[in-house]
Length: 218
Image (tube, rainbow, N blue to C red; front, side, top):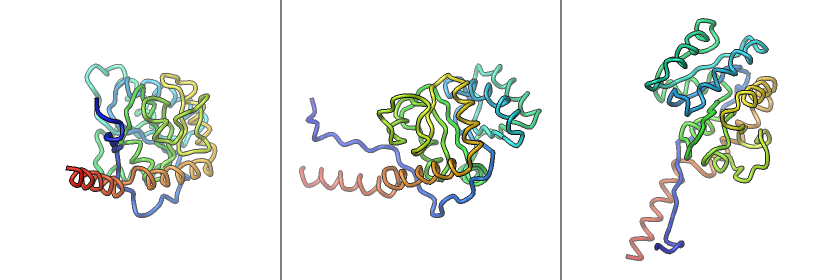
């Protein structure tokens, strides 16, 4: 067994844009990741049409590749695309991701299980208001490792709902769409949290210090 004091954990890290996000007026939401059931795509598509009926200017952009065996999901997405509610541009580049974050205000990731999703960290760093699920390392990433009930996080760095729960996802998304100030507050806090805990510069400094410590001990 390895002594506990010899174990060091470096969490995922991402670059933080120099300029903070200022515009939260958009009613566009963004999903980035594998397009498959395990990422909550089925629940997301279920809630989209209901949300759109109450918010006709709502729009969802789903960036990513469809995985094998998702024909029914693709059919559902194409029907919503035909109505102008959903857009599936395929995999997006880093430049396209930056543009999407500038044009939208909500990042949604209704995943069933995760470690520490880099896509969520990137959205937080960009100042996006995130709506996700309380699974894996996500509560810790958002600074709420000991939540009591769902949904939660409206006063924090991102809203968490129950995985595989379309109703809760729909209600949370509708609430965020109704309140631009709430989106701004969540996004601003999210960016600050990444700057403090998950910025790539801090990660590099920690890694160098660990190697320096090992060198001296060796």
